[in-house]
Amino acid sequence: MTEVQDRQRGIQAAAILNDDVFQGAFKQVEEKIFSDWKITTDTEQREQLWLMMRLLDQLEATLGSAIANGEIATHELLRLNPDDSDYSKSLYSQI
Image 1 (cartoon, rainbow, N blue to C red):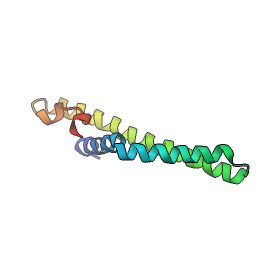
Image 2 (cartoon, rainbow, N blue to C red):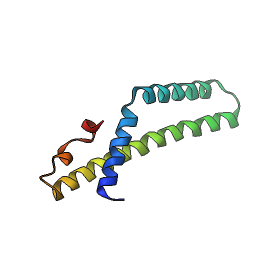
Image 3 (cartoon, rainbow, N blue to C red):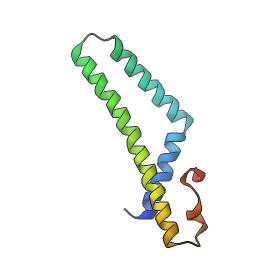
Image 4 (cartoon, helix red, strand yellow):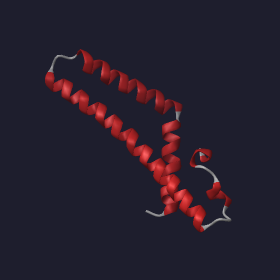
């Protein structure tokens, strides 16, 4: 993937993670899974719920990684193109 593509993916990932609707939905799903996990007595269901929690963590980490890669790509693009003002902006200012 090119630096421009990494930067664009970072911008998109930041937009997703900072979106109020996404944050609310993510928190609601996370709380529901955790609540169900705490009260269930079925071992198999408990393990499935635990895996679901880990998948949510993985989703958040993957988006965070895309943001970090986008920031790195932005710095590299700025280094290679110091006169291009588009690359001097943070990913977060692009959302």
